[in-house]
Each structure stands twice: as C-alpha cells, then as structure tokens.
Length: 355
Ligand code: ADP
Ligand code: MG
View 1 (tube, helix red, strand yellow):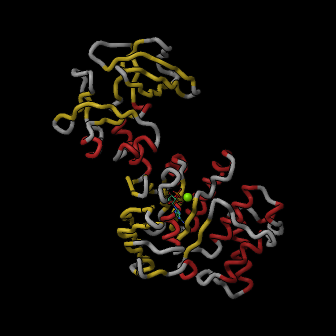
View 2 (tube, rainbow, N blue to C red):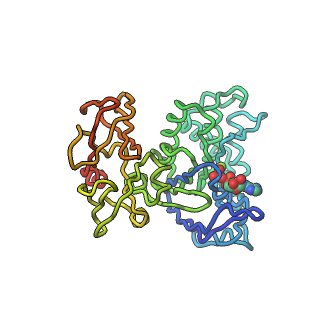
View 3 (cartoon, rainbow, N blue to C red):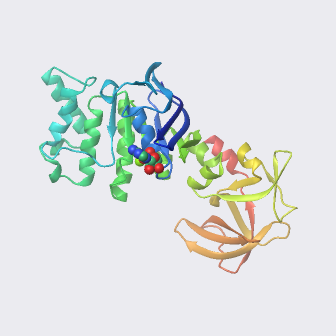
C-alpha cells in the first residue's frame, strides 16, 4: 500500500499540487487523468522520488519515503518508470537495454548469468521483441522503441511501475494495440501501475481506478464506470466524455425539474451532492431518448444531425441552450428544423450498476 498524505508541491511561488490524498493498493492499475499542466507529472515524480513534496508525506508499506525533510531516492525504491520520450541509449542493442537493470538495479539485480539470460528472454517475449534483440534503437520503429523502454522497466519486476503518457508519441492504431499489451503485462506481473494520461479513453479502457485531476487538485477517484456514469463535479462530467448539464431545481433531493419545463420531472439517478448544490442534472448524450415533439415534454429543434455510423449525433436547441444527443441509427431519424422532444432514459441507472 502506497499512501500519499496531504501532499502539496510548490515550484517557487506556484502551487502545482494541492493537498493530494490518495491510497494505491497492491496490484492495482491506477490512471492519473487530467489536462496538460494539472500536475500529473509532478505527482509521478514525487512517487518516484525525484523530488520532495513541499508539505505532506508519502509512505510505502508504512515506511516514510518522502516528506519535506526526507527523501528516499529513486534507486532506493523498488520502482521503474517509463516516459513519453523513450529515453533509449543509441549505443546499446535491445538486449543490452534489457540486461542493464539486472546488472545495475539495486532491487532487480540478478547475479547468476543463466538466470539473467532467462529473465531477459522471458521479458523480450512478453513485449514481442525476441527477434529484434540485436538491433540498435535507430533500427527500430516508434512502437518497437516503446516496447524496449517497457521491457527495460519491467525486467527487474518492480513493485511499482510508473508510466508518464507512454503512448502519446505513437500513432492511433499502435496506441490501441499497446493498450492491450500493457494491460496484458500488468495482468501477468501483478505490479502496481500508476499510468499518467491526458487521454480519457485510455484511462477508461485500461484502469481499475481513475484519479481525475484539475489544476493541481484531485476532483474524483473512482472506477472508470463510476467516473463516467456518476461524475462528481462539473469538471469531471465535461472532461471525461461529454455531458449536458441541465439547470433546474432539485425538489426533495430526489426529483429534478428542468428550467423552463415545470411539468417535467426526472428521478435522481445518482447525481452527486456537489452537482445538486449547483442545481444541475448531468445527462450523457446517449442517455437522451429523442422523439417527435410532444406537449408537456422538454421540446426543442434539431440544429445539426451528423451521421457517425453507429449513432446519429444531434445538436438540439432547447430554449437558448444547445444539447448534445446521440441516438442509435436504428431509432427514428430527424433532420435539422424538426421539432423534437427529449426524454431521459431512466433505464441507464440499472444498467450501469449491473455491469
Ligand atoms: P502535467 O504533467 O499534468 O502536464 P506538470 O506536473 O508537468 O503537469 O506541471 C504542473 C504545473 O507545474 C505546470 O503549470 C507546469 O508549468 C509547472 N511546473 C512543472 N515543473 C516545473 C518546474 N520544474 N518549475 C516550475 N514550474 C513547473
Ligand atoms: Mg506531464
């Protein structure tokens, strides 16, 4: 268990991290998700031991490793790190990169030569590089270089693997492929992984829990599904996926009346206390049901309709607000200018819980 307790980090007068509290469990895959500049890399560097927090403490298995007056350096922690820039050595072959930690790492060191060779080939096989082990970095593609960086990081079998936007230098197709490989490696090794990304779909697809950060603070920590279906704050509901934030009145805490439609009411489907306090009801675009205009319902006009293959994406003008609505291609189709009503798919709550 890694415990980040009330950690803040200042660069001069600038506060990059504010009162971060987080517990990382054994074998967990945690994504740190947030926009550029929100403090993700800073948090990772503190976990790695590259610098001290300005206040607060980090403990690993109850041992204090970082505080304002204490710093256990990276080489004395059983960790590995993978960066966005692969940081390979041009004069070393693939195999030499992967041997390196076994010869020099304080934790990962293996003395027996045969055992060393066994571990190297096992690791090269895991990342699919066996056939390329005698190549130099200049003779490899971007994806292959990233695999070398990955192999070098996992060969000492670290207790904690830190990854900072490891796929962002790769093209889209390769990124999808590498997502699966990284998941597979995590499953095989059982290492705790902290995976930094600004890509919400990476975080949703890969992790056990997502830590959503904004401006140096944690906004929400939850499994991907809860982040998506029950965003706690306005920031989370708009940064992770798209959300329509409907303004209105919460009555008796469990019923919502949208502004401009006093005869419409929607049940509480898990809206957070924070959003309720702001008189908001978040609705995902695919959570709407779009029908022909009906009296007494939320009614507006289709502004745009975009065919997306599996879905039609509508922009619907309701009073002076534009809502995003995604509808299956198998539903009734509408065109710009059509008057439509929007209902909320109440079934979503049950679906979300049963998955
Ligand atoms: P992220 O990885 O989420 O993009 P960073 O942790 O790199 O964000 O940076 C968080 C904030 O701290 C940014 O505003 C950045 O400009 C600032 N920052 C990062 N490193 C330093 C530094 N060494 N000195 C001063 N400011 C820094
Ligand atoms: Mg960064």
